[in-house]
Amino acid sequence: MPSSKKNMVYRRLPKQDRVLGCNIPGLVHHYLLPGMGTVPWIVNSEIYPLKYRGIGGGIAAVANWSSNLVVSETFLTLTDHLGSSGTFLLFAGFSLIGLVSIFLLVPETKGLQFSEVEKLLEKGYSPFKKSSKKVKKEKDGHSS
Image (cartoon, helix red, strand yellow):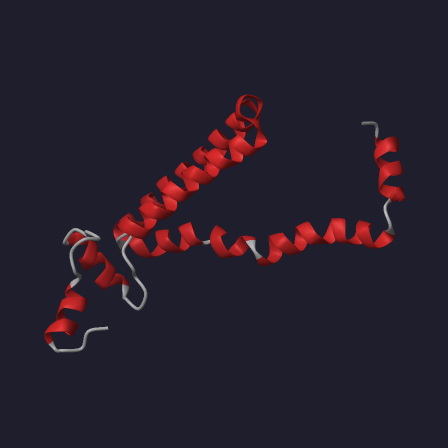
């Protein structure tokens, strides 16, 4: 659409709609996106041992940007074949698989020092066995 036609459509909107149309995406970006957008970077800063933190963060960044590239390159083709609803459902399914995987496989590090996280991972983390911290509390009679 030529810019003059876009401009005409824009001018037909009431001023309040133009203001909302320009500001809502900025507000969403400012308030909602930082919530989940920073999670992978926070996990990366906590999960790797100090001597591997740089290389681990680098590998995670490459994986992140590679995933972004795959989504960007396949989106239009998938939209042509599956439709927009099917494409978003497919990506939602991948997101759900990722969420369940993270819930099951990534250990809780809240309240732990970096050295404690390193020891937890050196022993081999399994989501199906009790951590030593929980076992100690249960032995003392302080189950949470």
